[in-house]
Image (tube, rainbow, N blue to C red):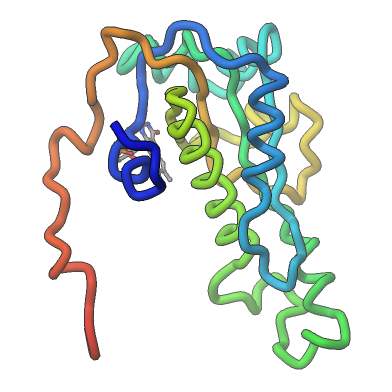
Length: 199
Ligand SMILES: Cc1cc2nc3c(=O)[nH]c(=O)nc-3n(C[C@H](O)[C@H](O)[C@H](O)COP(=O)(O)O)c2cc1C
């Protein structure tokens, strides 16, 4: 299978059963590439928190994600690391208070109809998913639904920081099969979602 970008985007899918994985050093190097995503005002408020070993286990326990996956996709717990994708709104409100941006009126967090800190962090997350796929590692992006007191605070994440998603990383287990919503719903036809001229 080709490794050009189009092929990587087409073949990427979520992995829900892992066995082993990259070294944490390799993963941190990939995060360093992934952070070269577009960034509004070059505010660069996207962060990655990489957890492995006992920290990864503690994350699954305290966040409730371990219990959730134990019932639905137990192979997720065998990932080698989890990466929390984090966004710092203050980096954007302070950047947009600078002289070249202040006229946009985005100094208050509530003024943002599209919070660019979430946009930027999501793009960095997709970069990481594609870099992992390029190297044939598996990954699952999932959300957190519990209170931050059990999922973010235990890892020293400041209270103003938002979590955009969590990426479980590892080697795709040989018995991993496509599961999840994408196996129960058809991909929408291009003509339904790509609009030309008007909606
Ligand atoms: C914001 C977001 C949250 C997601 N949360 C979960 C989740 O909690 N559990 C899960 O198994 N998959 C989760 N997914 C994965 C989606 O189900 C998956 O991306 C979608 O079905 C398309 O499948 P594919 O990525 O394999 O192509 C999430 C994806 C996104 C973008």
